[in-house]
Image (cartoon, rainbow, N blue to C red; front, top):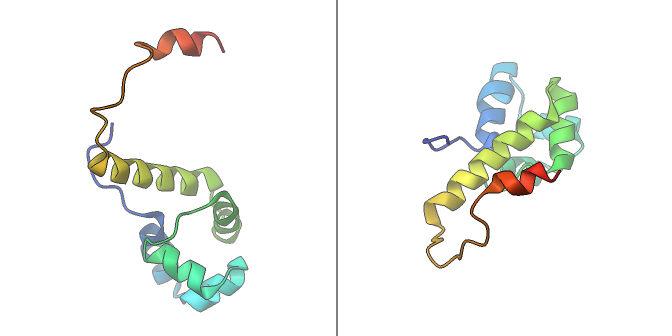
Length: 103
């Protein structure tokens, strides 16, 4: 389990792709075929990376869409773990191994 606050993928996009390549949000949004508002919201961490956006980013930056989706998943799970109280959730199965063995 990761014990740190993973960055939102929008932060990664801004710091590792847009800034080094000298791209503006508007130029990048146009290249991706999304609105400036959507891309701005992603960069600000206010909008999630969807499969659609992940595919667009992967084509534009020659990356793998699962990397973008994985970053989003890591970020989302960490955020939820910080605020979700599971104390009232009842355990219905003790082990995942029996369940997974059936697949």
